[in-house]
Amino acid sequence: MFESLGERLQNALSKIKGTGKITENNISDMMREIRLALLEADVNYVVVKEFTNKVKEKALGEEVQRSLKPGEVFVKIVKDELTALLGGEQEDLNLVGNPAILMLVGLQGSGKTTQIGKLSNLLRKKHAKRPLLVACDVYRPAAIDQLKQIGKQLNIEVYEEGKKDPVEIAKNAINYAKENKYDYVLIDTAGRLHIDEELMDELERIRTSVKPQEILLVIDSMMGQDAINVIEGFNNKLPLTGVILTKLDGDTRGGVALSVRHLTNVPIKFVGTSEKMDGLDTFDPERMAGRILGMGDIVSLVEKVQSEIDEKEAEKAAKKMQNGKFDLEDFLSQMKQIKKLGPLENLIKLIPGASKMGLNNVHIDPKQLSHIEAIIQSMTPSERKNPDIIKASRKTRIAKGCGLSVQEVNKLLTQFDQMKKMMKQISNGNMRMPF
Image 1 (cartoon, rainbow, N blue to C red):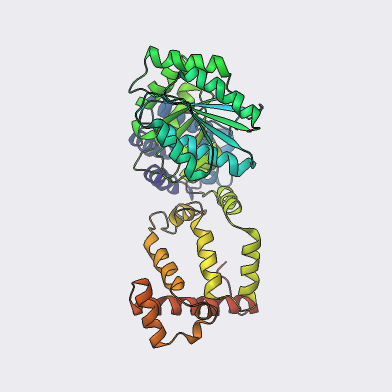
Image 2 (cartoon, rainbow, N blue to C red):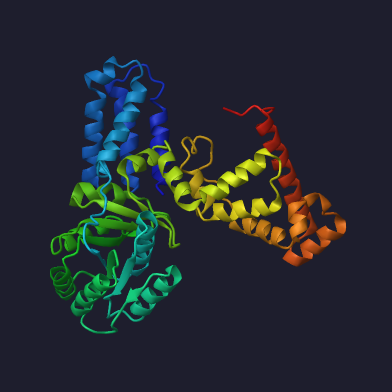
């Protein structure tokens, strides 16, 4: 997300990092580039004007003039103002309630039903508590079936009463959740093609009836600045507590994310990062500002690894590597763990300095990982434990078994052998690390 904007801003800032003195002239040139980058990313004009004025005013202040490294101070000013623009501090969900009730609203086609599945999955993983999904979209064809399918995929129960009154369904669902000791209730409401009185009246009646702790608006970031009008339209009728911004992983310029809080005062609480059920991240303004400016987001990377990787399995694999006993069975197990983290190129972008190393546009073909899995799974247990026994006839059999070429089998075995040698050198202290 924000690749194009981030690249433009980083290029602009790189010109001033080594500057010994900041003047009105070089600041003006810099701010012109930053202004253009923001406008081209579809950031609201008023927001761009206020942002650039604040940065310029602080950059020409006495603190920067007296600094030994004014260029670095300027970059910090840009990051701080970008953080403020994105909302300042991360706003957590209000989950106080027994059960805590979350109501998701949005226009038809915003991806609301999918996001309710992602959010329930995230809450379950993060808090280890039980969510209940409630089907209150009784108008859109197949909306209830879609939610039930998502519930089945995630093994999360869905409460539904068919095409009855959504207000009654919501009330009954809360009673059911209390009786069955569910911790969270997530209500999927009906959307419309546009905001109308009928839609808002129904949402208001559900809100008054169940009194949710959170009312989250799901909105498609591809809408651009129209999203601001939608947020204001909903917020004028319902007290929104936050926004879930979807499709930030797509071909979007991202300007709406930089305009939402400033123009509507409604915080962004989550962003959609992929179409998968784990493709929803909490929105942290400071971390996002760092990512936009190419500073990475190592905290998010560590959190993601901790949430998905089995710590005991990782320790076991590390010990085997150190002892030189790491085999293809272990390699396959580690690959499956890594796949849980999502697309590897998304993880690479979280590494500080990734853009400078040219890693922002790296594409890792998931088919290659699938090929490796297929090759190893076509081996016998003894071959996985001792790859040295795999000679010509065995390679031919393995290749036929996985539908790939002998060359690909050879390539995997060679790479695995090189990796083992490297690990042995590191554990013996005979290899100098490049840092």
